[in-house]
Length: 66
Image (cartoon, rainbow, N blue to C red; front, side, top):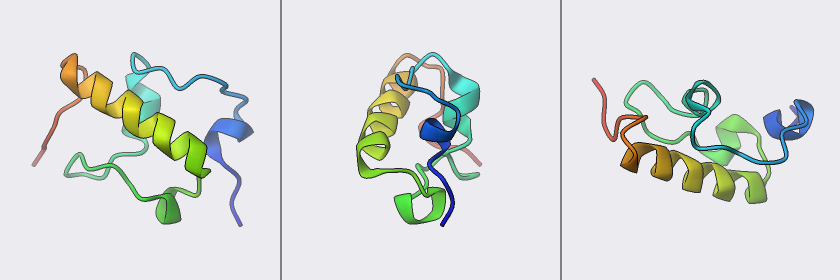
């Protein structure tokens, strides 16, 4: 099984301003990739979702994309 991206890179806090990292977990339509596909822990998936939603609200990430 593949290792959790955040534990691998020793990232303790998932920051909504770190758009480059968040983009890795979005598909081409700007939807959040499932845990099954990304291989991250449940706790980190929840924190990631919060960070992405926060970034979207702040206008750093798109809600939808084509």
